[in-house]
Image 1 (cartoon, rainbow, N blue to C red):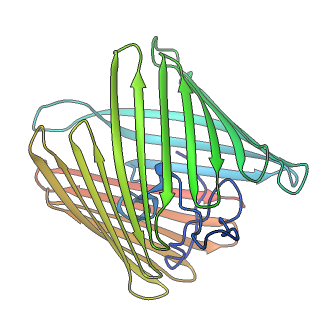
Image 2 (image 1 turned 180 degrees about the vertical axis):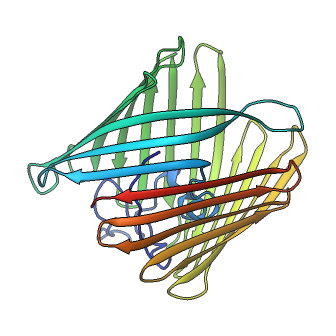
Length: 317
């Protein structure tokens, strides 16, 4: 939580790779570099899952200099407890978060990103990302908690080719994964992923496809656990786009479909969603003045009679 408000225009559904600039075609092929496997359906879920919350949220961001910045976040509200009962179970919670960000660019492509977060309830997270070259980068992520067996540490090794991207991940509890995406045509990309959970002695895999034009993005993702997920984005204008998804699990034979809209104007961005479970949601971000943003969140689950409302302010750069 406590992420900065992003006012990216909906027409910018052409994904920019985090490892550097967008892939350029070499002399031997005219195929551009695809997005990473983990970002196959990123644009759709920016509209379908905008980060809804219940309660009060207050975020402050301050840049100390061009490389270093601080963040403070306060949250007071309630969270849902996992339970199979028809009526939702909630628990009141409040915590304060202190964060620090450091970005150091030594050369044209050598970039070091360091992020740290400390929560008042005893959790700590850290992230380090280093771009070794314009093709190869290393990321390290760690989340430490005071609950046993819930701390997580991972290393990611990313490589970006001319028309493909690959990633190797190693984590604690003997976790390993590898994924790969390949641009097949100028509009179509295919990818696959394999994961191994050492402690559970279990493996799973996934396959993905992504079709992208100037105004449409369609994705399909299949996992060996039984999940099938399809997403669709249609840009209606420079300020409006619609998105939808279909999620089905063949083990439980349960399916859900959602449709959402994303509307951007000069001073605000509003996103709304409705699904086949009779759940509707809306998320508003409005710039009141320079450095001050109002955030309103609402989610109405008519089937469970669960209604969530959130109010937030973001101050800073």
